[in-house]
Length: 402
Image (cartoon, rainbow, N blue to C red):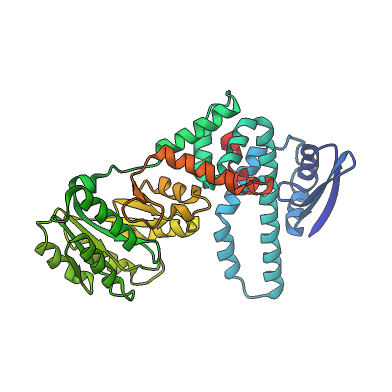
């Protein structure tokens, strides 16, 4: 491997020198400012250098940031192919070390190119970059933020661009009307452990009784895993004056639903599953075929990490949920992550839960209220988005945003 040092007036000229003398396969190892000049240290593998010496001299064309960025993205997408090829080597320690070093240098190059692309975007589209910063502070995913910003006109004031991006997001958050309380239904609440399924069931049941009475309500507990879960549902039934039935498995659910099919609202509490539980898919599939009238809703805790909610949305698809309920909003420091996940999954939000009071702390959804809540939480928490984070998130797609 051959390493060279270049000095130039700016980064563009330094990269031109690297391209002319070491070719497009050179890897940027470091860059810094020295006085009024830019210092770039680049490296090239010996095999690549020999190929360059045999080829015609490179022309002194201007370095194309977009082309370099697309090349870095293609390299990233084909990383698994490189890794597979590395696994097929003969186990030579020298070969393994060289492969590891090349992969590390490749990742370093991708980081450098992303930083350059973000800096270039900041110069060419300052309004868009400021809106991206605001959305990042809210906790929104990079893909959704880039999609929203791409729809914002470049020729507008900053406050108008910010309002437009938030309005576009609010418009894309799916919501569901309060139809269970109005018309009833057969609803099973599914979700991970500890998200508040039983508490949410009690809140929905209490709202129904306040409006219609307990005559057409029945509660079913299918949670035979958590200690005291079935007793808790039966206690709720006694308080509300509604029957509460306990079953040990989803296999019994079909006959129980047939027995109580004359009731307008049937609420089913299910055991909490870990998204990585190997029995999850089978159990949820059995639940989804228990009755043609059965509708499942996925309960998500707004206070959970964004990655955990994304995994729950993916893994609980086996239950074929038609909606979701967001709980523990009062405990969440940020809700941008869960709102991003729901927006991208396009799973309508049916209710919001925030508190332990049974009847009062469950309310219908207004998407613009959720956006306002996300902004308030980000400001109260003092959320920030530094340049390094922004370049990592948006450097690879900067050419598409400009």
